[in-house]
Image 1 (cartoon, one colour):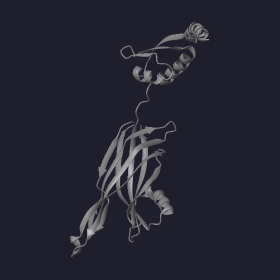
Image 2 (cartoon, rainbow, N blue to C red; image 1 turned 45 degrees about the horizontal axis):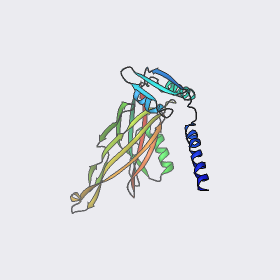
Image 3 (cartoon, rainbow, N blue to C red; image 1 turned 60 degrees about the horizontal axis):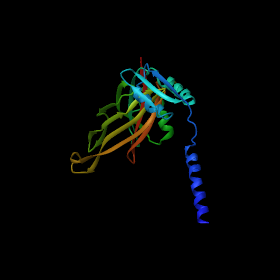
Image 4 (cartoon, rainbow, N blue to C red; image 1 turned 90 degrees about the vertical axis):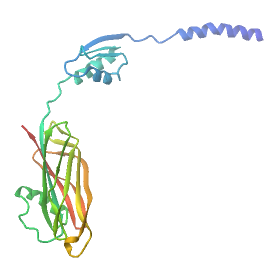
Length: 252
């Protein structure tokens, strides 16, 4: 019996070897050389590696050598056509930021706001119950799409102890872009305000101690050109809040 098992095992070895040699036939490979006009060869190569690992970029020649199956090559060719296009020219964009304050205090003059903000005030009165609104500061940024923008200001004030204490503002944008419909996208918008408040009251009132609190917001927003958008509310105290109103336009 042991001899029979040994013979069967020896006979199985050649069969196993034959099975190992039987491999699926490899699909024929197609070689192509793509000469790019606009796109960076290295960046395009990194993207089309999802179709095949046989990609060789050549930066000086602005070309890519590719080896892939015929179906994969069709997909690669289509991808390169989509990627190898001229970059859109940067556009100049101007942002205007209005920092408005809503308050429950009486006595704000009815004409304290410019006429151009009437529609904004109407919108704010509909959404919030503050008695009066006033304009604290106006900041303007101008730059090209894709660039970071920043500015700062010292407009607006809080009256503490009979004296007007300034509000310090920093306005930052990570990037601007203009969509095909003309809408302007503001990415990484950050507004930071240092707002004064009384920490102690001396006698007389002019000796009131003043400290500062940080009040701000961070968001992304899309704006139609020329439209004034209420971006957000920043609470200063139970009776007052700041509102950021943003307008954008493309400079021709």
